[in-house]
Length: 453
Ligand code: NDP
Ligand code: 2IT
Image (cartoon, rainbow, N blue to C red; front, side, top):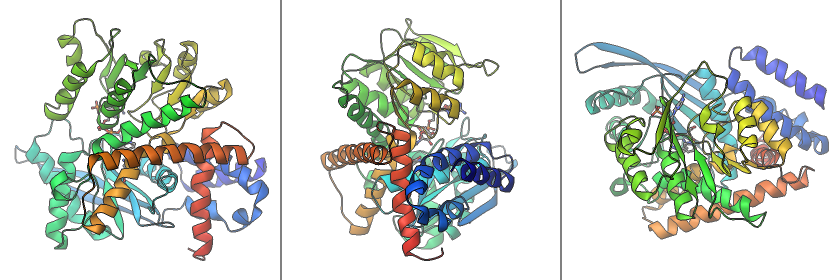
Protein backbone atom coordinates (compact mmCIF):
# COMPACT_ATOMS: atom_id res chain seq x y z
CA UNK A 1 0.00 0.00 0.00
CA UNK A 2 2.87 2.36 0.73
CA UNK A 3 3.90 2.05 -2.95
CA UNK A 4 0.39 3.03 -4.02
CA UNK A 5 0.38 6.06 -1.68
CA UNK A 6 3.81 7.22 -2.87
CA UNK A 7 2.96 6.79 -6.55
CA UNK A 8 -0.39 8.58 -6.03
CA UNK A 9 1.29 11.55 -4.34
CA UNK A 10 4.05 11.73 -6.97
CA UNK A 11 1.41 11.92 -9.72
CA UNK A 12 -0.60 14.52 -7.80
CA UNK A 13 2.44 16.73 -7.26
CA UNK A 14 3.50 16.48 -10.91
CA UNK A 15 -0.02 17.36 -12.09
CA UNK A 16 -0.47 20.24 -9.60
CA UNK A 17 3.00 21.81 -9.26
CA UNK A 18 3.65 24.39 -6.53
CA UNK A 19 0.35 23.78 -4.68
CA UNK A 20 1.89 22.85 -1.33
CA UNK A 21 -1.29 23.23 0.76
CA UNK A 22 -3.25 21.05 -1.66
CA UNK A 23 -0.56 18.34 -1.62
CA UNK A 24 -0.52 18.43 2.19
CA UNK A 25 -4.30 18.06 2.50
CA UNK A 26 -4.48 15.22 -0.03
CA UNK A 27 -1.52 13.37 1.52
CA UNK A 28 -3.29 13.20 4.86
CA UNK A 29 -6.49 11.83 3.34
CA UNK A 30 -4.64 9.28 1.18
CA UNK A 31 -2.80 8.06 4.27
CA UNK A 32 -6.09 7.39 6.06
CA UNK A 33 -7.99 6.02 3.07
CA UNK A 34 -5.19 3.51 2.40
CA UNK A 35 -6.55 1.68 5.47
CA UNK A 36 -9.88 1.33 3.64
CA UNK A 37 -8.25 0.17 0.37
CA UNK A 38 -6.53 -2.65 2.26
CA UNK A 39 -9.94 -4.16 3.00
CA UNK A 40 -11.98 -2.78 0.09
CA UNK A 41 -9.91 -2.84 -3.12
CA UNK A 42 -13.07 -1.96 -5.09
CA UNK A 43 -12.69 1.73 -4.13
CA UNK A 44 -9.14 1.75 -5.42
CA UNK A 45 -10.15 -0.03 -8.62
CA UNK A 46 -12.90 2.55 -9.21
CA UNK A 47 -10.24 5.31 -9.05
CA UNK A 48 -12.34 7.20 -6.50
CA UNK A 49 -9.40 9.17 -5.07
CA UNK A 50 -7.98 9.94 -8.50
CA UNK A 51 -11.36 11.45 -9.43
CA UNK A 52 -11.84 13.28 -6.12
CA UNK A 53 -8.62 15.29 -6.39
CA UNK A 54 -9.57 16.63 -9.83
CA UNK A 55 -12.01 19.55 -9.45
CA UNK A 56 -15.24 19.02 -11.36
CA UNK A 57 -14.87 22.63 -12.45
CA UNK A 58 -12.59 25.62 -11.70
CA UNK A 59 -13.50 29.18 -12.61
CA UNK A 60 -10.93 31.99 -12.48
CA UNK A 61 -12.03 35.48 -13.40
CA UNK A 62 -11.16 39.17 -13.47
CA UNK A 63 -12.75 41.43 -10.84
CA UNK A 64 -12.41 45.09 -11.82
CA UNK A 65 -13.67 47.73 -9.36
CA UNK A 66 -13.16 51.39 -8.52
CA UNK A 67 -11.82 52.70 -5.21
CA UNK A 68 -13.03 55.80 -3.38
CA UNK A 69 -10.37 57.94 -5.09
CA UNK A 70 -11.75 56.97 -8.50
CA UNK A 71 -8.79 54.75 -9.30
CA UNK A 72 -9.36 51.50 -11.24
CA UNK A 73 -8.40 48.34 -9.36
CA UNK A 74 -8.34 44.74 -10.43
CA UNK A 75 -8.31 41.50 -8.43
CA UNK A 76 -8.64 37.85 -9.28
CA UNK A 77 -11.72 35.78 -8.42
CA UNK A 78 -11.91 32.00 -8.01
CA UNK A 79 -14.46 29.24 -7.50
CA UNK A 80 -13.29 25.64 -7.25
CA UNK A 81 -16.21 23.20 -7.53
CA UNK A 82 -14.56 20.05 -6.26
CA UNK A 83 -17.35 17.52 -5.76
CA UNK A 84 -21.11 17.29 -6.24
CA UNK A 85 -21.33 13.58 -5.37
CA UNK A 86 -23.68 13.95 -2.39
CA UNK A 87 -25.24 17.37 -3.00
CA UNK A 88 -24.78 20.73 -4.69
CA UNK A 89 -21.35 22.39 -4.35
CA UNK A 90 -21.04 24.10 -0.97
CA UNK A 91 -18.29 26.04 0.76
CA UNK A 92 -17.13 29.46 1.81
CA UNK A 93 -15.63 32.46 0.05
CA UNK A 94 -12.32 33.82 1.33
CA UNK A 95 -11.14 37.37 0.65
CA UNK A 96 -7.48 37.58 1.63
CA UNK A 97 -4.32 38.72 -0.22
CA UNK A 98 -2.57 35.37 0.49
CA UNK A 99 -4.95 33.19 -1.55
CA UNK A 100 -4.11 31.37 -4.78
CA UNK A 101 -5.50 28.46 -6.77
CA UNK A 102 -3.66 25.86 -4.66
CA UNK A 103 -5.16 27.23 -1.45
CA UNK A 104 -8.67 27.12 -2.90
CA UNK A 105 -8.13 23.56 -4.15
CA UNK A 106 -6.98 22.52 -0.67
CA UNK A 107 -9.96 24.22 0.97
CA UNK A 108 -12.47 22.81 -1.55
CA UNK A 109 -11.01 19.33 -1.04
CA UNK A 110 -11.26 19.62 2.76
CA UNK A 111 -14.83 20.83 2.39
CA UNK A 112 -15.88 17.57 0.65
CA UNK A 113 -15.06 15.64 3.83
CA UNK A 114 -16.28 18.25 6.30
CA UNK A 115 -19.62 18.54 4.54
CA UNK A 116 -19.97 14.77 4.26
CA UNK A 117 -19.36 14.43 8.01
CA UNK A 118 -22.24 16.80 8.81
CA UNK A 119 -24.55 14.08 7.36
CA UNK A 120 -26.30 16.79 5.30
CA UNK A 121 -26.46 16.59 1.48
CA UNK A 122 -23.73 19.06 0.44
CA UNK A 123 -20.86 18.71 -2.02
CA UNK A 124 -17.52 20.51 -1.69
CA UNK A 125 -16.36 23.87 -3.06
CA UNK A 126 -14.42 26.97 -2.08
CA UNK A 127 -13.71 30.32 -3.68
CA UNK A 128 -12.88 33.93 -3.12
CA UNK A 129 -10.35 36.52 -4.13
CA UNK A 130 -6.99 38.09 -3.32
CA UNK A 131 -8.94 41.28 -2.48
CA UNK A 132 -8.13 42.53 1.04
CA UNK A 133 -11.15 44.06 2.81
CA UNK A 134 -8.91 45.48 5.56
CA UNK A 135 -8.75 49.28 5.38
CA UNK A 136 -11.43 49.50 2.66
CA UNK A 137 -14.56 51.59 3.08
CA UNK A 138 -18.01 49.97 3.08
CA UNK A 139 -18.60 51.44 -0.38
CA UNK A 140 -15.38 49.94 -1.70
CA UNK A 141 -16.27 46.54 -0.27
CA UNK A 142 -19.74 46.83 -1.82
CA UNK A 143 -18.39 47.75 -5.27
CA UNK A 144 -15.91 44.88 -5.09
CA UNK A 145 -18.61 42.39 -4.03
CA UNK A 146 -20.92 43.55 -6.83
CA UNK A 147 -18.20 43.13 -9.45
CA UNK A 148 -17.19 39.72 -8.02
CA UNK A 149 -20.79 38.52 -8.14
CA UNK A 150 -21.11 39.94 -11.67
CA UNK A 151 -19.20 36.87 -12.85
CA UNK A 152 -19.79 34.37 -10.03
CA UNK A 153 -23.58 34.45 -10.44
CA UNK A 154 -23.28 32.48 -13.70
CA UNK A 155 -21.79 29.52 -11.84
CA UNK A 156 -23.90 29.30 -8.67
CA UNK A 157 -27.54 28.77 -7.69
CA UNK A 158 -29.63 27.31 -4.85
CA UNK A 159 -29.50 23.81 -6.40
CA UNK A 160 -26.10 24.19 -7.99
CA UNK A 161 -23.52 25.90 -5.76
CA UNK A 162 -24.20 27.72 -2.49
CA UNK A 163 -21.27 29.86 -1.25
CA UNK A 164 -20.91 31.16 2.33
CA UNK A 165 -18.44 33.22 4.37
CA UNK A 166 -14.86 32.41 5.35
CA UNK A 167 -11.84 34.60 6.17
CA UNK A 168 -12.62 38.21 5.22
CA UNK A 169 -16.22 37.40 4.27
CA UNK A 170 -18.78 37.97 7.02
CA UNK A 171 -22.32 39.28 7.26
CA UNK A 172 -21.53 42.56 5.49
CA UNK A 173 -20.00 40.89 2.44
CA UNK A 174 -22.69 38.19 2.25
CA UNK A 175 -25.30 41.00 2.18
CA UNK A 176 -23.66 42.82 -0.74
CA UNK A 177 -23.07 39.56 -2.62
CA UNK A 178 -26.68 38.44 -2.10
CA UNK A 179 -28.10 41.79 -3.23
CA UNK A 180 -26.15 41.62 -6.48
CA UNK A 181 -27.05 37.97 -7.12
CA UNK A 182 -30.72 38.80 -6.63
CA UNK A 183 -30.55 41.61 -9.18
CA UNK A 184 -28.67 39.61 -11.79
CA UNK A 185 -30.55 36.33 -11.43
CA UNK A 186 -33.95 37.95 -10.91
CA UNK A 187 -34.80 35.64 -8.02
CA UNK A 188 -34.84 35.69 -4.23
CA UNK A 189 -33.41 32.29 -3.35
CA UNK A 190 -31.20 30.60 -0.79
CA UNK A 191 -28.12 30.96 -3.00
CA UNK A 192 -25.80 32.01 -0.17
CA UNK A 193 -25.71 30.98 3.49
CA UNK A 194 -24.85 33.29 6.36
CA UNK A 195 -27.65 35.63 5.31
CA UNK A 196 -29.21 38.22 7.66
CA UNK A 197 -31.86 36.92 10.04
CA UNK A 198 -34.70 38.90 8.50
CA UNK A 199 -33.89 37.95 4.89
CA UNK A 200 -33.53 34.18 4.95
CA UNK A 201 -30.75 33.61 7.46
CA UNK A 202 -30.87 31.18 10.37
CA UNK A 203 -30.41 31.88 14.04
CA UNK A 204 -27.00 30.77 15.18
CA UNK A 205 -25.02 30.79 11.90
CA UNK A 206 -22.47 33.31 13.34
CA UNK A 207 -22.04 31.21 16.49
CA UNK A 208 -22.05 27.82 14.80
CA UNK A 209 -18.39 27.22 13.82
CA UNK A 210 -16.94 28.39 17.15
CA UNK A 211 -19.63 26.81 19.35
CA UNK A 212 -19.45 23.60 17.34
CA UNK A 213 -15.70 23.36 17.83
CA UNK A 214 -16.07 23.69 21.59
CA UNK A 215 -18.96 21.19 21.68
CA UNK A 216 -16.64 18.77 19.88
CA UNK A 217 -13.85 19.45 22.39
CA UNK A 218 -16.26 18.80 25.26
CA UNK A 219 -17.19 15.45 23.69
CA UNK A 220 -13.51 14.53 23.41
CA UNK A 221 -12.82 15.46 27.04
CA UNK A 222 -15.84 13.43 28.14
CA UNK A 223 -14.17 10.28 26.75
CA UNK A 224 -11.58 10.80 29.49
CA UNK A 225 -14.08 11.78 32.15
CA UNK A 226 -13.15 15.46 31.99
CA UNK A 227 -14.87 18.78 31.23
CA UNK A 228 -13.69 22.23 30.16
CA UNK A 229 -14.40 23.69 33.60
CA UNK A 230 -11.26 25.24 35.04
CA UNK A 231 -9.15 24.48 31.94
CA UNK A 232 -6.77 27.14 30.60
CA UNK A 233 -7.19 27.56 26.84
CA UNK A 234 -5.14 29.14 24.05
CA UNK A 235 -7.25 30.52 21.17
CA UNK A 236 -5.81 32.04 17.99
CA UNK A 237 -7.54 34.50 15.67
CA UNK A 238 -10.13 37.08 16.67
CA UNK A 239 -12.64 36.66 13.85
CA UNK A 240 -15.93 34.85 13.58
CA UNK A 241 -14.77 31.38 14.63
CA UNK A 242 -12.51 32.56 17.48
CA UNK A 243 -15.04 34.93 19.01
CA UNK A 244 -17.70 32.29 19.43
CA UNK A 245 -15.22 29.59 20.44
CA UNK A 246 -14.18 31.90 23.29
CA UNK A 247 -17.81 32.61 24.21
CA UNK A 248 -18.63 28.91 24.49
CA UNK A 249 -15.41 28.07 26.41
CA UNK A 250 -16.37 30.75 28.94
CA UNK A 251 -19.94 29.40 29.20
CA UNK A 252 -18.51 25.94 29.94
CA UNK A 253 -16.27 27.29 32.70
CA UNK A 254 -12.92 27.45 30.86
CA UNK A 255 -10.39 30.27 30.96
CA UNK A 256 -9.07 31.83 27.71
CA UNK A 257 -5.73 33.66 27.86
CA UNK A 258 -4.89 34.44 24.21
CA UNK A 259 -6.45 36.00 21.11
CA UNK A 260 -4.69 37.16 17.93
CA UNK A 261 -4.80 38.64 14.45
CA UNK A 262 -2.23 38.72 11.67
CA UNK A 263 -0.35 41.58 13.40
CA UNK A 264 0.35 39.60 16.58
CA UNK A 265 -1.28 38.21 19.71
CA UNK A 266 -2.58 39.20 23.13
CA UNK A 267 -1.70 37.28 26.29
CA UNK A 268 -4.07 38.11 29.14
CA UNK A 269 -3.03 36.12 32.18
CA UNK A 270 -6.17 37.11 34.12
CA UNK A 271 -8.32 35.64 31.36
CA UNK A 272 -10.58 37.11 28.69
CA UNK A 273 -13.94 37.37 30.45
CA UNK A 274 -17.35 38.10 28.91
CA UNK A 275 -16.84 41.88 29.16
CA UNK A 276 -13.46 41.71 27.41
CA UNK A 277 -14.91 39.43 24.75
CA UNK A 278 -17.66 41.98 24.09
CA UNK A 279 -14.89 44.54 23.59
CA UNK A 280 -13.09 42.22 21.09
CA UNK A 281 -16.36 41.73 19.17
CA UNK A 282 -17.01 45.44 19.00
CA UNK A 283 -13.38 46.17 18.05
CA UNK A 284 -13.31 43.56 15.27
CA UNK A 285 -16.88 43.49 13.96
CA UNK A 286 -17.90 47.14 14.20
CA UNK A 287 -14.74 49.26 14.34
CA UNK A 288 -12.76 46.76 12.23
CA UNK A 289 -9.72 47.53 14.40
CA UNK A 290 -6.55 45.63 15.24
CA UNK A 291 -6.16 43.31 18.24
CA UNK A 292 -3.21 45.35 19.53
CA UNK A 293 -5.78 47.86 20.88
CA UNK A 294 -6.80 45.27 23.52
CA UNK A 295 -3.50 45.80 25.37
CA UNK A 296 -4.09 49.58 25.42
CA UNK A 297 -7.49 49.08 27.02
CA UNK A 298 -6.63 46.26 29.46
CA UNK A 299 -3.34 47.12 31.14
CA UNK A 300 -2.59 43.62 32.44
CA UNK A 301 -2.55 42.22 28.90
CA UNK A 302 0.57 41.98 26.73
CA UNK A 303 0.67 42.38 22.94
CA UNK A 304 3.45 40.55 21.07
CA UNK A 305 3.86 41.53 17.41
CA UNK A 306 4.00 38.75 14.81
CA UNK A 307 7.57 37.91 13.81
CA UNK A 308 7.55 35.79 10.64
CA UNK A 309 11.35 35.30 10.81
CA UNK A 310 10.87 33.06 13.88
CA UNK A 311 10.32 29.31 13.53
CA UNK A 312 7.70 29.40 16.28
CA UNK A 313 4.76 31.57 17.31
CA UNK A 314 5.07 32.43 21.03
CA UNK A 315 1.26 32.28 21.36
CA UNK A 316 1.59 28.47 21.39
CA UNK A 317 4.40 28.60 23.96
CA UNK A 318 2.20 29.45 26.95
CA UNK A 319 1.30 26.75 29.44
CA UNK A 320 -2.27 25.58 28.93
CA UNK A 321 -4.59 22.56 28.97
CA UNK A 322 -6.32 23.08 25.61
CA UNK A 323 -5.60 24.80 22.30
CA UNK A 324 -8.13 26.04 19.74
CA UNK A 325 -6.42 27.23 16.54
CA UNK A 326 -9.10 29.33 14.80
CA UNK A 327 -7.17 31.62 12.41
CA UNK A 328 -5.67 30.02 9.31
CA UNK A 329 -3.80 27.07 7.74
CA UNK A 330 -0.37 26.01 9.00
CA UNK A 331 -0.41 28.41 11.93
CA UNK A 332 0.93 25.62 14.20
CA UNK A 333 4.35 24.63 12.89
CA UNK A 334 6.43 21.68 14.14
CA UNK A 335 8.16 23.87 16.77
CA UNK A 336 4.76 25.15 17.94
CA UNK A 337 3.42 21.61 18.29
CA UNK A 338 6.45 20.71 20.41
CA UNK A 339 5.95 23.83 22.53
CA UNK A 340 2.27 23.02 23.05
CA UNK A 341 3.08 19.51 24.24
CA UNK A 342 5.86 20.83 26.47
CA UNK A 343 3.43 23.41 27.90
CA UNK A 344 1.05 20.66 29.01
CA UNK A 345 -1.65 20.82 26.33
CA UNK A 346 -3.88 17.74 26.45
CA UNK A 347 -6.41 18.71 23.80
CA UNK A 348 -6.18 20.45 20.43
CA UNK A 349 -9.49 21.12 18.63
CA UNK A 350 -9.15 22.89 15.29
CA UNK A 351 -11.68 25.54 14.29
CA UNK A 352 -9.65 26.56 11.22
CA UNK A 353 -8.92 24.32 8.23
CA UNK A 354 -5.59 22.47 8.64
CA UNK A 355 -4.05 24.96 11.09
CA UNK A 356 -1.49 22.31 12.12
CA UNK A 357 1.32 21.41 9.72
CA UNK A 358 1.80 17.71 8.87
CA UNK A 359 4.75 17.25 11.27
CA UNK A 360 2.69 18.85 14.03
CA UNK A 361 -0.23 16.50 13.38
CA UNK A 362 2.14 13.51 13.61
CA UNK A 363 3.52 14.82 16.92
CA UNK A 364 0.02 15.24 18.37
CA UNK A 365 -1.06 11.77 17.25
CA UNK A 366 2.11 10.14 18.62
CA UNK A 367 1.76 11.94 21.95
CA UNK A 368 -1.65 10.43 22.67
CA UNK A 369 -3.32 13.79 23.44
CA UNK A 370 -6.85 14.43 22.22
CA UNK A 371 -6.41 15.90 18.73
CA UNK A 372 -9.31 16.76 16.37
CA UNK A 373 -8.75 17.95 12.79
CA UNK A 374 -10.68 20.97 11.50
CA UNK A 375 -12.71 18.93 9.05
CA UNK A 376 -14.43 17.34 12.07
CA UNK A 377 -14.18 19.89 14.91
CA UNK A 378 -14.81 22.85 12.56
CA UNK A 379 -17.86 21.33 10.86
CA UNK A 380 -20.46 23.28 12.86
CA UNK A 381 -20.55 26.21 10.41
CA UNK A 382 -21.11 23.97 7.41
CA UNK A 383 -23.75 22.02 9.33
CA UNK A 384 -25.77 25.10 10.21
CA UNK A 385 -25.38 26.31 6.63
CA UNK A 386 -26.96 23.03 5.56
CA UNK A 387 -29.88 23.77 7.87
CA UNK A 388 -30.12 27.30 6.43
CA UNK A 389 -30.53 25.71 2.98
CA UNK A 390 -33.27 23.45 4.36
CA UNK A 391 -34.97 26.40 6.08
CA UNK A 392 -34.95 28.40 2.82
CA UNK A 393 -36.37 25.47 0.88
CA UNK A 394 -39.18 25.06 3.40
CA UNK A 395 -39.81 28.82 3.68
CA UNK A 396 -39.73 28.48 7.45
CA UNK A 397 -37.83 29.91 10.41
CA UNK A 398 -36.45 27.79 13.25
CA UNK A 399 -35.88 29.15 16.74
CA UNK A 400 -32.51 29.84 18.32
CA UNK A 401 -32.99 27.02 20.84
CA UNK A 402 -33.85 24.59 18.05
CA UNK A 403 -30.67 25.51 16.13
CA UNK A 404 -28.42 25.20 19.18
CA UNK A 405 -29.94 21.83 20.00
CA UNK A 406 -29.38 20.63 16.44
CA UNK A 407 -25.80 21.97 16.37
CA UNK A 408 -24.91 20.18 19.61
CA UNK A 409 -26.51 16.97 18.27
CA UNK A 410 -24.64 17.15 14.95
CA UNK A 411 -21.27 17.73 16.67
CA UNK A 412 -21.96 14.81 19.01
CA UNK A 413 -22.74 12.59 16.01
CA UNK A 414 -19.62 13.66 14.11
CA UNK A 415 -17.54 12.94 17.20
CA UNK A 416 -19.09 9.48 17.54
CA UNK A 417 -18.62 8.78 13.82
CA UNK A 418 -14.91 9.71 14.00
CA UNK A 419 -14.34 7.32 16.90
CA UNK A 420 -16.36 4.58 15.26
CA UNK A 421 -14.49 4.70 11.91
CA UNK A 422 -11.11 5.03 13.66
CA UNK A 423 -11.88 1.92 15.68
CA UNK A 424 -13.30 -0.03 12.73
CA UNK A 425 -10.14 0.53 10.67
CA UNK A 426 -7.73 -0.38 13.44
CA UNK A 427 -6.62 3.01 14.82
CA UNK A 428 -8.76 3.60 17.93
CA UNK A 429 -8.86 7.22 19.16
CA UNK A 430 -7.33 8.58 15.94
CA UNK A 431 -9.75 11.37 14.97
CA UNK A 432 -7.79 12.11 11.77
CA UNK A 433 -8.33 8.65 10.34
CA UNK A 434 -11.89 8.58 11.66
CA UNK A 435 -12.82 11.89 10.01
CA UNK A 436 -11.12 11.11 6.71
CA UNK A 437 -12.57 7.61 6.42
CA UNK A 438 -16.07 8.59 7.58
CA UNK A 439 -16.13 11.54 5.16
CA UNK A 440 -14.68 9.48 2.31
CA UNK A 441 -16.94 6.42 2.43
CA UNK A 442 -20.19 8.32 2.00
CA UNK A 443 -18.86 10.25 -1.00
CA UNK A 444 -17.16 7.20 -2.51
CA UNK A 445 -20.35 5.13 -2.32
CA UNK A 446 -22.32 7.94 -3.96
CA UNK A 447 -19.76 8.11 -6.79
CA UNK A 448 -20.00 4.37 -7.38
CA UNK A 449 -23.81 4.56 -7.40
CA UNK A 450 -23.75 7.39 -9.95
CA UNK A 451 -21.47 5.67 -12.48
CA UNK A 452 -18.40 7.20 -14.02
CA UNK A 453 -18.75 10.83 -12.86
P1 NDP B 1 -12.35 35.89 9.99
O1 NDP B 1 -11.93 36.65 8.80
O2 NDP B 1 -13.56 36.28 10.74
O3 NDP B 1 -11.16 35.83 11.03
C1 NDP B 1 -9.90 35.34 10.66
C2 NDP B 1 -8.93 35.57 11.81
O4 NDP B 1 -7.72 34.90 11.51
C3 NDP B 1 -8.59 37.03 11.96
O5 NDP B 1 -8.26 37.28 13.30
C4 NDP B 1 -7.37 37.16 11.06
O6 NDP B 1 -6.53 38.25 11.37
C5 NDP B 1 -6.67 35.86 11.32
N1 NDP B 1 -5.86 35.51 10.14
C6 NDP B 1 -6.30 35.33 8.88
N2 NDP B 1 -5.29 35.05 8.05
C7 NDP B 1 -4.19 35.07 8.81
C8 NDP B 1 -2.83 34.86 8.54
N3 NDP B 1 -2.40 34.56 7.30
N4 NDP B 1 -1.96 34.93 9.58
C9 NDP B 1 -2.40 35.22 10.84
N5 NDP B 1 -3.68 35.45 11.16
C10 NDP B 1 -4.55 35.36 10.16
O7 NDP B 1 -12.44 34.36 9.50
P2 NDP B 1 -13.18 33.13 10.20
O8 NDP B 1 -13.15 33.27 11.67
O9 NDP B 1 -14.46 32.91 9.50
O10 NDP B 1 -12.22 31.92 9.75
C11 NDP B 1 -11.12 31.48 10.55
C12 NDP B 1 -10.75 30.07 10.16
O11 NDP B 1 -11.85 29.20 10.38
C13 NDP B 1 -10.38 29.88 8.68
O12 NDP B 1 -9.42 28.87 8.59
C14 NDP B 1 -11.68 29.40 8.07
O13 NDP B 1 -11.44 28.67 6.89
C15 NDP B 1 -12.20 28.52 9.17
N6 NDP B 1 -13.63 28.27 9.18
C16 NDP B 1 -14.54 29.24 9.04
C17 NDP B 1 -15.89 28.95 9.13
C18 NDP B 1 -16.93 29.97 9.03
O14 NDP B 1 -18.09 29.58 9.06
N7 NDP B 1 -16.65 31.24 8.92
C19 NDP B 1 -16.35 27.61 9.33
C20 NDP B 1 -15.32 26.66 9.60
C21 NDP B 1 -14.01 27.00 9.48
P3 NDP B 1 -6.61 39.60 10.49
O15 NDP B 1 -7.86 40.28 10.94
O16 NDP B 1 -5.37 40.32 10.81
O17 NDP B 1 -6.65 39.13 9.05
O1 2IT C 1 -14.90 26.62 6.21
C1 2IT C 1 -16.10 26.55 6.35
O2 2IT C 1 -16.65 25.57 6.82
C2 2IT C 1 -16.85 27.70 5.93
N1 2IT C 1 -16.23 28.68 5.61
C3 2IT C 1 -18.32 27.68 5.87
C4 2IT C 1 -18.85 26.75 4.85
C5 2IT C 1 -20.32 26.90 4.65
O3 2IT C 1 -20.78 26.47 3.60
O4 2IT C 1 -20.99 27.45 5.51
